[in-house]
Image (cartoon, helix red, strand yellow):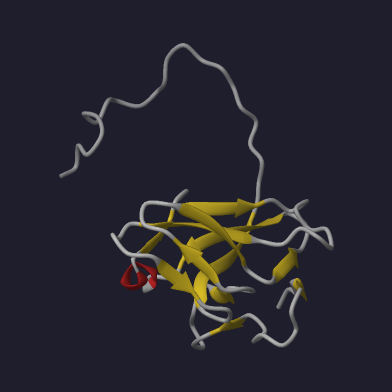
Length: 142
């Protein structure tokens, strides 16, 4: 099993952990309490800097229960490159309040999850035509 080095900024908060034996992602918590006004976006620090093994990267996603708070990750997902791994490179979640009332994320709330994935850069080749037939456009399979 590969190791991932994780620096916590506030060690009084729970260390990131997989919540079940077969979980694909581990949970991340808010390092501070943040109030988000209706329609606004705030960045919430996630209390970790992460050093992944060579040729790996971090996919950061909202926990599926985040919508119950009236919040969504504004950019959908986050990508942490292998070289985003310095002592001060704290992961953050940009959250938008989609309700009509202020929403407070409390310090220690589990709001995001991270998946460590292998990375392979591809050679990008410019062509004028592709080899595959057209499928019919966006949403073409129903």
